[in-house]
Length: 367
Image (cartoon, rainbow, N blue to C red; front, side, top):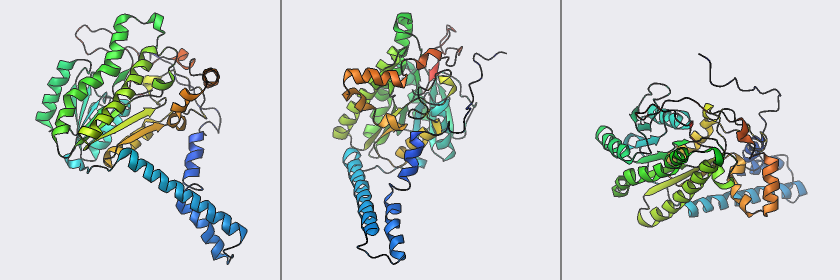
């Protein structure tokens, strides 16, 4: 059987894996790390260098600056996110929407192997058939009644959910003038309304629990920048980010035992993004799902609130809206954000979970 797409192009240069994210990571673990910074003056002292020698003074000043910045970062995180909640994986029941493949499946498999109880909600069958410690429930997250029924089954089979990961999403990848009304409605229902449905269904149980819980929302940098051929997707992701921030503010006041994690990734390396060309592999590298999964899992394990954005540009993307409109246009042109979708293929031909057997839009986890 012929595949619906061709083989992706291979890297053809030794420096292709090099990116600004890799460079920053190396510096953060060397010159910009407090421990390493203090090693330098200690090495000078081991060479019998006087304390008032210029190299010694410069190295001490540098180490002190890095240490102060590190302390400021810790204080900033504490003020922004508060104290963590106590997490016991043997007691956690984790619900993941869109967890049959990609990022969601990766998180599900990791927690399943670590002894947590995991429920995957997806309209598609699980990519690997089954996974240790993971229970699959066929569910269309755009259907309120299906979600309510599955929630009752999860409670009966596994226990009260303590972690909700809203990960399901679709991308159609058409210009607005080519979108049909049913496609728009399906996109908005999956990418936005499903978050309201799952939150209204699973959040009350977390609110009643003294141990609280964690809500994870997978959004996208496209919700901030927008992009050609992604009008429906960008609008829904912008709304999802606003929903999460507003919900986090409400929960801080009414249910401080519930933690919230907002995930804002760039393009993920997944077949569901097949065909999308990375505008700039150095400044905007494709994100590996395992890297996002590690950050999400760490936030859940530590019981903390968090805002996860990767690669590096995603952490500063809000500053894009501060630029003058002329510079924004130049930045878009240089980044190629509005031409990346021209080669979009996606995962075509997936069967729908509905009774009609119609074709379904390509499913993705994040963009």
